[in-house]
Structure formats: structure tokens, C-alpha cells
Length: 348
Ligand code: GDP
Ligand code: MN
Image (cartoon, rainbow, N blue to C red; front, side):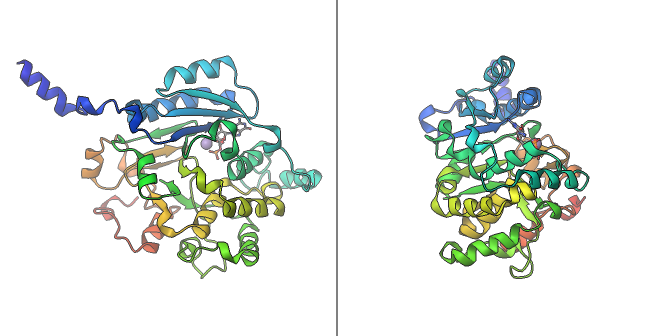
């Protein structure tokens, strides 16, 4: 009977020896979270999900950043949930304020006009947040010793077991950035972004990758931007790349143009366009095995066999991948990859 029970308990879950991974087997990587104190319980849900599906076997650190000090409740709740070390950092004011060349009255007037035009149109803090993720988070003191980051936000869910180490995939395959959901941006938030990017590459042609992803970003040979971007609330990436001179110059050029404040440029299109044009197309990775939700959108791996192997608990009917707003079909076509088996039956 005991033998039977042992056998059963093994076949029902992960073999025991896989539960704890030697700390020395970890990559030099960390989770990174920007959060307000008021986001603590939405974030607690996210942490619980990431720990259950992945990190309890690895013990990677969690770094929490905020533009104001974290309160005791935030620190107590989050530190009790993580398996690695929890560290809490304050964002330096020069990374969360207006640069000298921005006309703040003009920015305020634009926010008033944009209030009803698009989500967060009237929000000043949202613009600081997007600029922070575009150009500054990787410069934070607490992040300096790490090579890779995994960004987590409040109110996310992981739907499948992650029985591999995404950080290791990144390093061993020389990946610089990765995504799980790719979608089209609201055009009104990035009116002059593509034009500014083109000006940058006119003055810095040496930075344009010879094997870029230009034809993923544009369907007319580069004239206009399709709006396709990697949803950055999930992002596993390389600090080396963000800290490199080409990326820094790219960001500084965009920052000077003012669109973080005069429009509402998101860090997602900024990272995506940078990756698409500065990097080799093989340096961008799509994590097909990761089931993920944030807010309205869910992606659930295609194919019942895959979902069972990965122990997913998402509803495949909610899969974003093959819907109207998804850029994943464009990604597959750009890389000339066959669509996953069985996707036709799972079209929304
Ligand atoms: P959305 O996902 O685009 O709707 O934007 P969110 O409101 O979720 O913000 C993105 C991330 O930045 C989340 O992790 C938020 O907690 C965080 N965030 C947004 N605004 C602020 C802010 O003003 N201060 C701080 N500390 N975090 C912020
Ligand atoms: Mn969010």
C-alpha cells in the first residue's frame, strides 16, 4: 500500500527532487516590481501566482520600487510571500520628474485635451511611469548587480507551471528581451513616435540592425508603424542591453523630443521598437509555454495536449493570441513559423 501511495503522489505532481533547486544553479537575475502602496493586494495575488508556478523552486529575489516610500503593510505583506530576498527601493527624484526642456504648461494643456481621448490621457503620473520604465529603472542602485530582470505587475496571473528557468533560456540563447502578449497600440498615444524613431536612425545609421524586425513593426516597408508592441507588464529582459550605449542614445533622443509628456508614449512601444530595430531578430523571444493574464487580456497556450503537459488552468476560449487585436499572427508570419497545431479550432 505504501508503495502504491508513493507512486501515486509522484505521478500526481512534480517529482520531489525537482522541488528545490540549488541556489548555485540560479541565474544572476531578479524580479522587479514598480508599485504604489495602494496596489499591495493586487500585487500579493501576482506574487503568489509567480511563486506557486515558478519561483518557490528557485528563490529568485524580488525588488520593489516606488516613487514614495513603501509603508509597513506593503513591506510586511510582500516580504512574507516571496521565496527569495525582498528589497525595497525609492526612485531618485531626477528619474521621476520633468526634464528642463519640457514646457510643463503645454504638457498640462495636452493632458486636459487628452482626458477623453485615450486611457490615462489626463494622468501625469502614468507618463512619469512610462518614462521611468523606458529610460531609468535599469539604472536603479538595487538592480546594478543583476544581469536579467523579470517585470511583474499587480493583478497578473500565471496559468501554467513553469518547469524551466526563463532566465536561463535568455542567457543560453543570447536573448535580450521577451514577451507573452503582443498587441496594437492606441494610435493617439504615439502620434509622432515612429517619425522620431526614423529621425534617430537617420542620424545614427550605425545602430540599425542588419537583421532587424522592421517588417514586424511596419507592414509598408517602414513608412508607418503598425502599432505592434510587446505588452511590457510582462517582460523578461537583459540589463546589459538596456544599459548599452545604443539603447541609451535611443532613449535620450526620444526623451528630448518630448513625447513622453506631450503625447503618452508607452514604455512598451518604446522597448519594442528599440528591440526591433537595434537588435538582431533572433535576440527577441516569445515564451509560448507561459500562460498569462493581466487586466482584460489572457493568453492560454494553444493545444489541449500542451495545456495538460504544462498543467494550465486557463480557459482556452479566452486566448488572446489569435484574436483581432493580437500581433502574434504577424510575429509568426514575420519569422515564417507555422502556427501551432490546432489553432484553427481555438480561434476566438
Ligand atoms: P496599466 O497596466 O497600463 O493599466 O498601468 P498600471 O496602472 O498597472 O501601472 C503600471 C505599473 O506601474 C504597475 O505596476 C503600477 O503599480 C505602477 N505604477 C503606476 N503608476 C504609478 C505611480 O504613480 N507610482 C508608483 N510607485 N507606481 C506606479
Ligand atoms: Mn497594470
